[in-house]
Length: 235
Image (cartoon, rainbow, N blue to C red; front, top):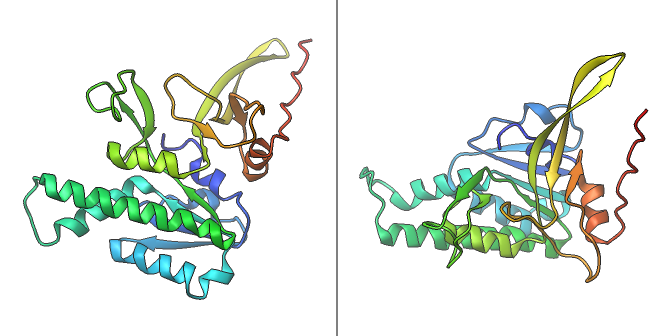
């Protein structure tokens, strides 16, 4: 959801980092983070040109990480591109198919920047789907990226790690007063409803939740080296 720390998490990835701000204007939280370049994206053609800059141009050597913020808005930009000068509010079945194809190509192109030793991050708003619009024959409700089902399925399969950021509220007693505490956290272990995923060696356990997630913690989980913080003893 908005405000749960997605952009802040992405800013912990190795620098120099290029963040593609797609119709968001939501980078105030990382304004003081060193080594982050923010590029505003308003057109579909911008995303295509940036990809070639990163894969063939000067960006090939310059950046270690690339963040697409967000893939949800990228779909909206793609829709405008496909519709062109068509002012009709109705999107035809053919257009939806074209949007799906363009989005899958974009995701694959950017994902494959890992072959150039770049870290690639896709951010997305969350979307709850039920049995009527779930992917394939899935009946149970799921919460995953807010893009069309065919694109969501492709995106989920293309990446190595999927996490769901959220704010966890808890309370503790300090000097006989009940104090509210807030943790920025991320679901990453297997979950009945939230779409989560980690590709790591067989037999390695994945924590259900990571508090204050960052690049180092994610990589430790992927490599099977993550240690859960010891539980604090109650006094």
